[in-house]
Length: 114
Length: 111
Image (cartoon, each protein chain N blue to C red):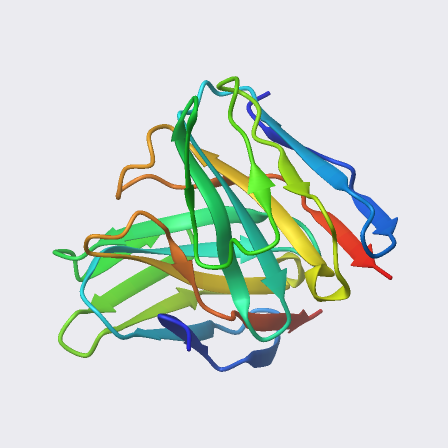
């Protein structure tokens, strides 16, 4: 089944403790992206990747890192999480990131930073 | 502020009624997409309408686009309880890679 898989589904951590949220897709998509969703703000893009070893900042990249060493994986790294990063995170992918493509989303990761 | 703004923020209707949601945006777009999100879950793509199209249908969904007014509407006909979800419009502005999402309309369909 074609899907985008995120782990974990829920995560509670403390300020400053490094964490990684994993994302994997099995559709051979070149384009992958991370969004965060906050009440009243919709989804905002954190980082995106057009292909292996090609990443770029989205609208809200501060406090986040990403890497794209393999086509299928696009982990999101929070080196020193802070409470304002408490949010619902989504990974998404599309074949080539072209303007007429739809995004495929993972099920989300609810992160709480205490 | 968001590129896409949905209206209303929340909508409650009875099963069998039609639901209409609107989306306004600010700048030129290549296309506009609508997504659905069940509570706390990932978004699912519903329909894409290109900037040179005025109307598009998919099952019980009808989407219109008025580029002169920079607005789009999503109509769900003969709604069902299972249509209860949040609906988002997303636009890809000319020259930008990212889809920009609005804040969404929460639709509640009462059985």
